Length: 73
Image (cartoon, rainbow, N blue to C red; front, side, top):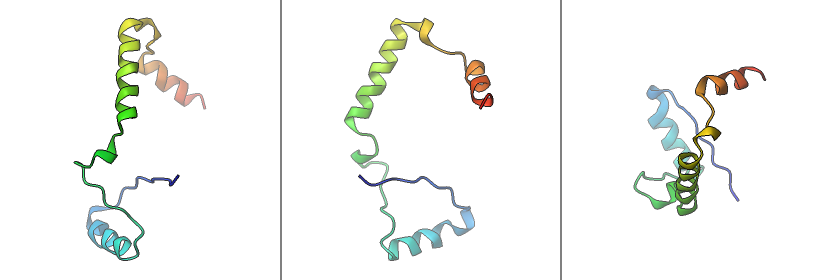
C-alpha cells in the first residue's frame, strides 16, 4: 500500500514544482472528478457515523472540549 502525502506549496512555486515532480514520475495527478478520491467504503463509513450520532447525540463532544483535549498533549 502506498502512502499519500498532502502538501502546501507557495503559489509562486507550485506550477514549476509540480512540473518537475511529473517529469520525475514522482507524483500522480488526480482530478477532482476521479472516483478514487473518495472511496465507497469511506462514504458508507461517514453515513454510518452520521446516523449513529443522530440516534445518540449524547455521544457528541463539544468543539471547545475537543480543543481542550488537544491542548492537553
